[in-house]
Image (cartoon, rainbow over all chains, first blue to last red; front, side, top):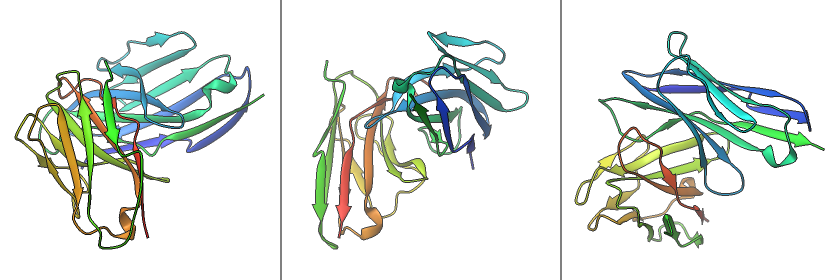
Length: 113
Length: 112
């Protein structure tokens, strides 16, 4: 059974701080890892990572995957109150078992002004 | 493009009642999914479909049925609602299995 573990489960920081969110996984036949941001409603897509060691960046957010050690990190620099959300990590396997994403429980990030 | 839409947005049911949640997507995606999200549990896959006329079970399928009669629609049914089915339900679609999924706005269901 595929498994995704995120840490920490919750985090409170001050505006301007840098945060690192962690995602480790156990999945048969790994295909890709995705990060989503969830505010009040639906998760919105941030990154999809398939190759080890290649950083994806979008503004103040960046993410990298380590396929050897089976984890990914999501970095947010110069945090703003609008970054407050639940950050979800999910993996896709390449065959066998159910399709769809296997999600971690999420990291609830709160940015205080 | 509306993307993925869900109806209704909110619903309150009594134990034993039935209902159907409708998901529609206008992106011509082959894959569609139903997830439930409970506090502290993340999203869990209920059922999914890899194309019109196909359905398959996910991680937590018990108590739910689905149908995909048209490519753009994916229906989730509860035949006899139970309080344990109180949750937020998300529909999603994707063009391929390993690509990003697009999520609908969610349906908040309460079963009393």
